[in-house]
Amino acid sequence: MGAHHSHSHDHDHAGHAHDHGHPHGPVDTGDWRYAVGLIVNLIFVCVEFGAGMWSGSTALMADAGHNLSDVLGLAMAGGAAWLARRNAGTRRTYGYGKATVLAALGNALLLIFACGAIAVEAVRRLTEPAPVASGVIMVVAGIGFVINLGTALLFMRDQHSDLNAKGAYLHMMADAAVSIGVVLSGALILFTGWSIVDPLVSLVIVAVILIGTWGLLKDSVNLALDAAPSGMDVAAIRDALLALPGVSAVHDLHVWGLSTTETALTAHLVHDREDSAALLAEAQGMVRERFRIGHTTLQLETGQLPDCPNC
Image (tube, rainbow, N blue to C red):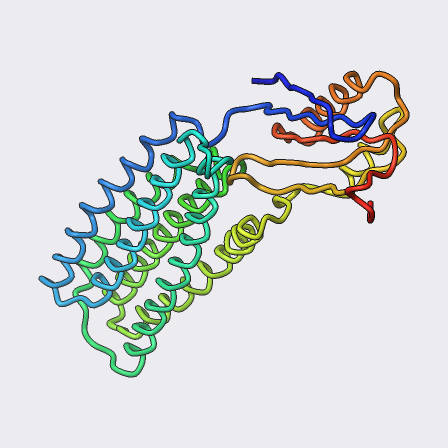
């Protein structure tokens, strides 16, 4: 790790080097979080759905369905984290890091689908209000709030550095919000008897969840399309490479996400320095330290190459 190699290109005075500054995929210590969250939430889904059937509460059964979407989301996120640690092969030369991007995208879509299901049920209950067992709702939803919040906290530390962890965090926080909303609506129904409060609170929660999900959906779609990760300033990277001593032009600059945690960069640098090895080391070190990009592929050129007429 941290080392690079260089080799000659078919054309004179051209160099090509790769730098892999850090390991691929999420850290191993994160896998247990997905397992714990999956097991605890799956048990709660069964308990909540059973309580909903026993009490005749459609709110609890709907919330159980929403919790089930979280279980599926955690399963996808955990599976993707495991896949991302697998070694690259002759066909998948970048490994399985993109699985974390697909899981983040699937998580966002699953959240939107769950919100749609909740909204449909809430609208139905606005037109067909029904009595609910407010006491049972408050107790079971309160337990759900504690479980969902605790699971979300497992992923809070890594939510800003790993889009996959961010998806799991948002998913569980969304469910915690749903649970606390159900608790509050149950309390209001208990004291006022206004059963219409429950679907109204559900619609408000759906709006909050959708607002929080938009960023995850946008970032995951961008990464799936090999766009530069959020917060990565490609123009600043180009300017920094151009500012290196001896570099006169930068072209074919590409920056994209290999996974939700790792970024790759390729570029051609036109230069007039005699010590190309020193330029490679300087360029790779600058990109790694300043922009946190550990996987770089740089080609050095002293002029326009025949195989790149538009450069």
